Image (tube, rainbow, N blue to C red; front, side, top):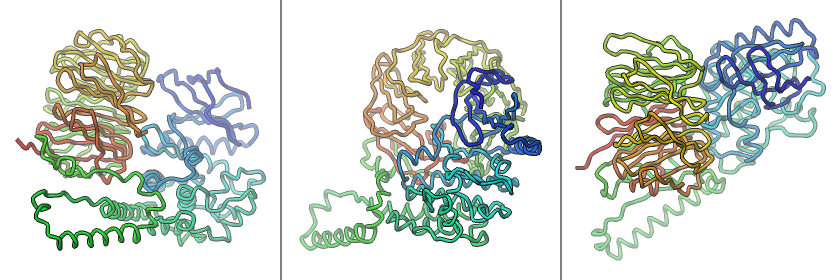
Length: 637
């Protein structure tokens, strides 16, 4: 196939190769109309030489473009170029599950549940729309830098692997995950996907697919006639419910498998409860009372030793296999109440509550004015509004399918920004919507009001727009960078800071009218910034990055941190207490102004995106798959 790098096809400039396969090449390209990167899977139509194939491919590309789900790679359309046929898709920055498994061999239970849940949500949604993937495997599961799982190649495999086509020389990488009915050339339905998900789970847990051999015949024979080695044999200590999920999904007879993705999701919920129970028993901690300690008699102390010995026996004997499997490596977290148990702080946090939104979208941002009224925004034009503390949510229709990235409320108006250089202004008073489209086609990631009249919009390619009249008119300000900008904050004196991609930090001394770059401290991307007062500030970002300043931003120091977790937002509650949220349900709390942090247990493994502090001081957090969390904050004074 001709190398297309450097060529322009329609409005797409091909920039690099993302991957090669037996049926074609996946290129990275820039959409010069919308100024964004896309992925283009180019197939050699001449090699197939079938008009029926071309028409079917086009039809399924159109159908796939109708699938709108946060865990499915979006299809934008298709192109034809000198005998080549290409499907234009969303470009996802991240790694395939195949690459992750190659690096790590196998995954912890936490990660298996976290990833497979998102896979099931995507596949279940597709099934409800009449789509069957037919080629689910680790290379078609992408995990982006924020930890969101994306499924690729819906319908494409359905077009290529037609009944009657030869399988001679087909790649073992696909046969490894084929259902028995696929191998026999029988008609297939959604239960084929259930089988492939079972194969994928098996490999995530054990490090190998259920049937693995250099011989393609032996692999197919295994799918048709043999039972795989039990998951618990390959990886001792795996919870029984997880092994049951895998083995049932791998049933030879389709009718013996789970009939819906939702059935597996229910069982994974039970697994969550199991893991919570194990963690609470393993990490049980009691607070010592000095007065009672002094009063202990010899008999009471002996009884204490007996109890502890019994607890030791239970943990290390009854839960021994689980400990040997290393599943608990990442469970060492604090309950939120225990962090504040000393009583040394003026604030106290309650437990973390999960507020149901009945949404599956990635909720990028939220804004709560008080504990009754709040708004969350997310992918595919999602805007949800609550007036009763999250007990019920109403969908606000902005007549858009663009992803919405941030929201603020100012002067009784919702200001919402998102992809495609769009600003949506919704009046809560007279229920009117005004949509403004800016030039450039950049994605907007943040909007922030400095005061009632002055606000800033940040976005890709160094975009920085400013209003001085409450949002009625906007002008572009030179940001001194072409990097994506993510967050902005102003100190009380008016000094401004913006953070972004590639370690970008820019500052302003004139309330945001001009900006200068600060010397690079890290090359990692920076996602959020916040200050308390004039001096204390924190910046968080990718690969566990936390930067701190104690002199108003003149000097920043990167804190030592062994974590590789992506941190997405940071907010101060007072001079000493700040909260950070990030991937896989991560919540960090500092009680000393950002010098040290403790991670709290949330029992939630969704990526957390944004923090909102209500007028009463309570904390609200948005995340993927419709997640909204609440932490009640009690003022002790």
